[in-house]
Image (cartoon, rainbow, N blue to C red; front, side, top):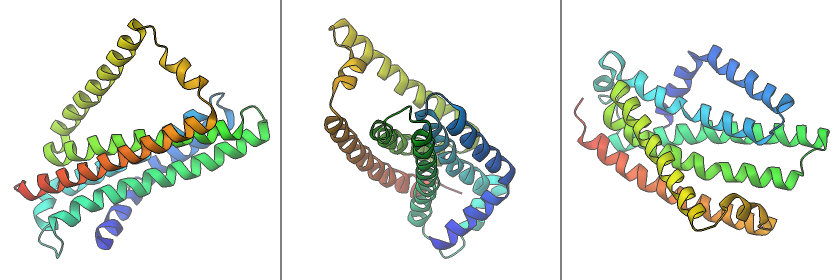
Length: 217
């Protein structure tokens, strides 16, 4: 897996201009944005998408048959894509969170505890996003994968919209309910959400290994 990670990071260097632009945008958002939680989510999700581009690079010009002629297993390949996505996304999350915490401390506009809890609530969405994106990309590849991914994300947003509408029909304001929770309760919600979505990520990995094992290159 180490060799695969080195390969993907070398491929990442080919996109260094885009990489630098995203870093500059993230820093600018942290310094000048009124909503300090937005830069954390933006950088985390953007950098997680590089794991998808690495799959596209592997498949380009019939590169996958050559790649699997090397001393790696298909399970190693699938697991490396998850490791690569988590390294990039968590690294971006950690750096952007530290930067935003420093900016908040300098401004004194947002309590650091609230900001940290908000940052923790982003992690379950990251795990969920990777759980959906990677199996779809491995299954369908480039163009079909993007179409399937758009459909899957659309279905998630539709399901979330329906949940909100049902809650409102029952007279429940979910956002107000979350805001009224004390900080320890929000932390518990974040911890449980992280645990559940991380288990989903492990399930997604098993699905992806099965996809790669059955795939013909």
